[in-house]
Length: 100
Image (cartoon, rainbow, N blue to C red; front, side):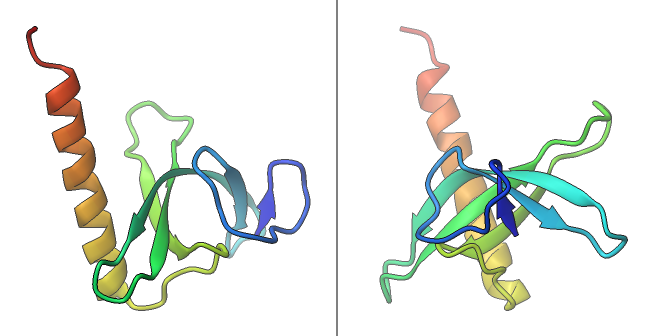
């Protein structure tokens, strides 16, 4: 996993940071950090990254990592974090998009 300047990532991820993740076929996909969430039970923080495909009809892809950029291997945990992030983003959008 490399950053947008081509270097290997070191240190915690930050919002809007761009990482390139190598695919199985040798290509790379660009993912941007769109959210950072902390587990209230154990204090562990996770990053939610999004890839927007070139094809406007294709859906965005999300991945969940720890703050060092390591993929969360527990699929159930990753889905729970992503669901929490999407619910939070939807609530934030509703609050800012209302009538004044």
